[in-house]
Image (cartoon, rainbow, N blue to C red; front, side, top):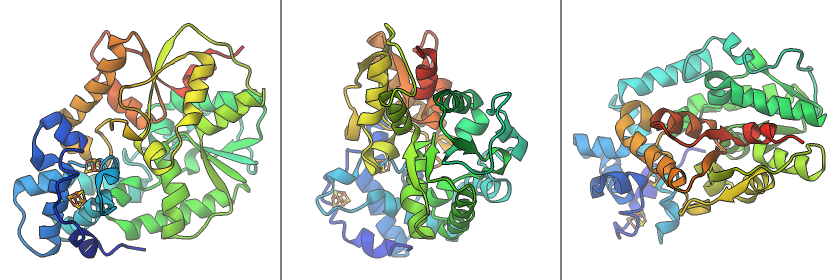
Length: 366
Ligand code: SF4
Ligand code: SF4
């Protein structure tokens, strides 16, 4: 169901509680980029008033990380208002050209990077022929499956090692459509919800295991709203690894490494998954916590179209997330390959190693 964005924005009393909460206020020190400024600009937009360049910038400078939600005494879902504002700006033909290109790549070619389907085969290890039907379906998502295939390969290797009955979609996989959702293209996202739900069900899987925390959130929480409840449940790879280790199907040893866990926003704030990734890291290394962790974790600064148009601001957040573990002599374990891609690009040597949980576990098999 498409929310009534205007009425939602009018609930806001501009009380100021969320003004300084946003990571983009944090890195710029400019209240114009805080959460309240985004809601205030959206109110004017929905009322049909003109917006200036700074208003547009603050609406596009939002990763929809949801860090602001807890601060609102009226329980206003600020990121939903931003979604609606972007949808309205698209109607007014005021979204950045890059947004149109990314959306078109997803709709026509099935990934934000418009990769040919065979690129999605690179992560499948030699000797593994995915069966047509299986109990589990592993879905790496675009950033893991296409851009950093070694991360998806690590998960596939672990699933094979554990003897789990699983399959993958390979070149049949299609983007979850998160960018369409983040930028208010809900009708297009609905088509993907139907396409992907039916495709996943065709494998007969009881459980879909995602590498990407955004795919996890989209499949689990957004698709049922856009299309219908699926005939499978959805879990994140961190939950699968935790269970396989606890059941003794993956035998691992503990290393001397210190690893800081970077919580992905959708995993922790929309789905409350905090413990599983921490349990996995604690079993194979010494877990280090960021000062701000769990629900209060800092966003990496890249998602929802921020990195393509404001890369320098996005990089400043990534640098903060790299500096803290570096000072404490820790490497970084991520629950999100898009965080990994973004943070690795912003890292200046000597920087901590940045790896997924599966890559870390794979190195510590007993
Ligand atoms: S969702 Fe995140 S980026 Fe967007 S306004 Fe809220 S805190 Fe800022
Ligand atoms: S905390 Fe809620 S009511 Fe207050 S300014 Fe932010 S969105 Fe508006």
